[in-house]
Length: 218
Ligand code: G6P
Ligand code: MG
Image (cartoon, rainbow, N blue to C red):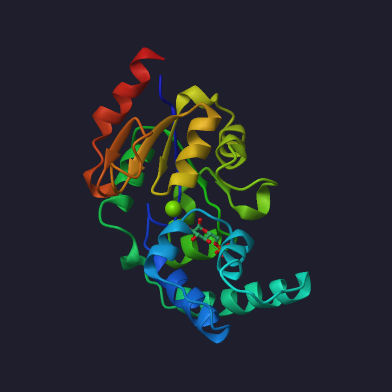
């Protein structure tokens, strides 16, 4: 039986991908490294230093650990200045309603994000209190696709993985859910997220009864 829902943040509850794109583009541009929207797609669910390394790998220049930290900090400062423009209305349609519906039906609700800015985003959207437990990049040793992020969320809720549904828009996140032994729901393109048990084009399209039926055989 499904008792718990564990949500990714970026791309599931709100769209921060455009801010990440703008901030990484500015950095890549300064370093004379090409950076496209397709590149940005591949960085969904990938943590900050992993994303930076992906970009630096396209360059012949060499960077020390100190250089890398400074570059990651520079990107994050720019990214945070964009986050500060976020409003509660920037939540994806249907996400607030889904969280309210789950709360009214007494499901446990957690966040499993690869972002160190997760709490800041939740605060901007004014939905921090909607979550019983929050896991962000600061709480885990191994980021997605390792299962640790989703497993830590289940442990925080004190529930078994099989009672949980993980909801993700990124391939790396989906691997984390599957590795954790949870039910999986993808948000986005069914071709990219083909390993998910159910895929919906948006959070607004999620059919709760269909998702709950996933738990009937487990
Ligand atoms: C999410 C996004 C990634 C981002 C990562 C780290 O998973 O999908 O694109 O790189 O968070 O975000 P942060 O806010 O810690 O830099
Ligand atoms: Mg995501």
